[in-house]
Image (cartoon, rainbow, N blue to C red; front, side, top):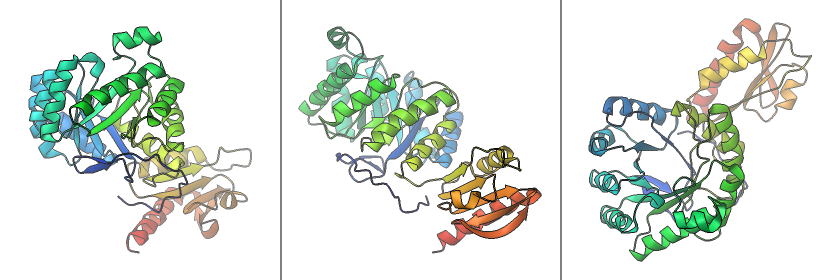
Length: 364
């Protein structure tokens, strides 16, 4: 994965470092992007195909649902065919958690509020024996009934108390390979809960807004919720939850990280909003460039501007860009004119220059 030196001035919260498979989480490790399959886990071929597509797009940890024992039995075959760490998602059936651990999953995610205390202890003992990471997943749909009554609902305070109670239970058994999440579909509630738990524990935190909706809504809610916390130095792994194809989650996640200068992964395409001076089809040009560069992990800031007069100056920090007008344009690098191009050749020439620039960086 090609990156450039990140410019972030954000001071990250100090957390413990754990390893999920071969991926370090917390401490001084990069913030990790993860996702979840929406295939039937019992269909190994389809599940592996989706994981590989997500992996190619930049997903670094993948979670699968385990609805039954047959799904759990597929873990070894799935794990054998993929390169990134595999996490099993458990909701109610503690036996499936034990099966997943036995079959060699790298981590499990459990909602402790849905599982009896003594069964949680069984899971923890098995995870400790196999060195399996556990994500304690606290969310509004799985809070203990006594906490819901105490706080009058799934408030930030209720989420935090649930997390701390479960940490204490895990630590009593000498287990600390823990990652925490306190998700809510309410963005302010989610932010408040993560801030509060970050002040009380140093375990790595997985950030996400649950039930965020379709791509537009999920992007907005995630950028606000995840982005706010990351800007405050809180968070070690992230997932943008989108209804539908999980492949759409990855570019949004990296977009949030790029916007905060936390990780420079993937092309950053910027374009002007257009105005009365625009004399080219900038929307079409931007769409073609974004589509062609989608899924690439090499970082490059590309600016597409609709005005030859102000464009290069306004996007002077871009690595490469194009400013067009009157059926021609100027390709510029770091704000300086480089070559003139006819409008029909915009996409072809710009992509050639981008590819050359990426190759030159690799050879430095």
